[in-house]
Image 1 (cartoon, rainbow, N blue to C red):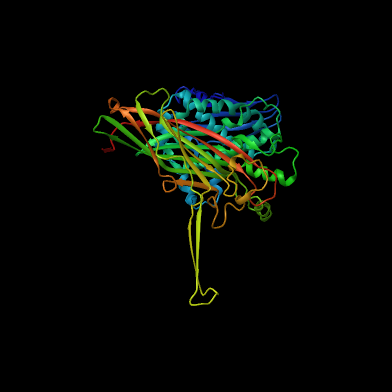
Image 2 (cartoon, helix red, strand yellow):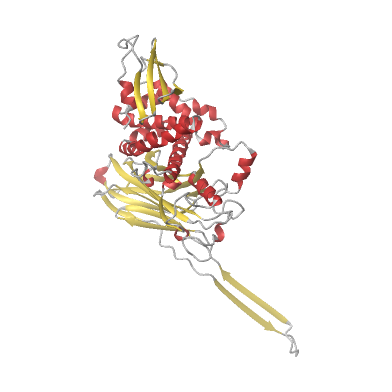
Length: 521
């Protein structure tokens, strides 16, 4: 662990800092010939932090902070500067999204909520979050704005050895990142998580290409993050994960590496697919009713399931770069199976029963009847009159198969994408023809939004579930759990390739259920 925050907090106060002392130095990463370090220089009542790249022959400053008042511990101004610079480097900040046109407004972070976050968490838990912020800022400095040897050194000596500890600590102290994302709002959250996703995607690629010193690092499927919240009658679970950090469940080329020994176009395709991130928002609406017969009725239904496979990249400025990327611009993974659940915590004994609201779906077959009547007038043997009546009953076909299930007192909602012709589940395909999933982001009959997203609202799935809870629990706040599994599949969309795969990620978190009546039965 780096513990940069602990080192900063232990710097002397203005009264205790000697006027003629040497700068305080903290080594971020070092080898026999190279060091990345941060030093603190005092000037009057202020302190300035400088990150430098040190070799036996040279010393190069790669970043200098604004002057921070020594009285402003724990360095609020420094933390705000790092956040603003990370947001300014986010892929979405350089994109063409109409929702981020007023991007400059995102950089106007208010200090009050950030100060509250810093003060409301223990130094140990906040230290891990600050380390993550510093690693993210250094990524854009070392990889984008420094010589290539520094970028390689950053991956091998700074990002690689610390990423496992950082994510292990963030999972342990998840409340800091969760509080930060909820406090700053969804726009800054999106910029922050896409910047983090971009960094992780680059690290995954680097690890696949250069294994030296990186063989003992954590599995890729631990690199995602999720958090659950309760507000205004909603239970919400949000999750983000780079696509190539998801676990492979089905593939046409199980034993091949991502980028090694591939045809040039195949390598470009995999490179494009590696720069994608799954962003999920699972939203349930719930209500609490107090029944006259002496129990509490808790009802919930799916309000929104939103899944976006976002591209983690920057706009190409040159015409040749744009033309090169056009062939693969519509290639991305898509959701092929979704499984979400919500219910009481494990071991809860206050639930009297769970009622599901949807039967197992048994589609009726199409029936067709045809009647024909012939007749004539007079003695003519040739039919003069002919009538025909036809009656048919048709069922509406859907690509998605919806089911409800239960695991104990937990309600499970599952949807599976199927091929309309064969009925086969798309998530189990291992290659071959893409069927009706070519050109899936264009045309009137496309299965997904043009930006690669998928939305289920209550118009597509409105059936809810309910629990009956003991009356004695009235007034308490219960800990429930919400979770989800998402399968993403890649099948060729516009290009010709044999690559086909399905990946999966699973999220789970706690949510609150305040037993306060929202209506009376």
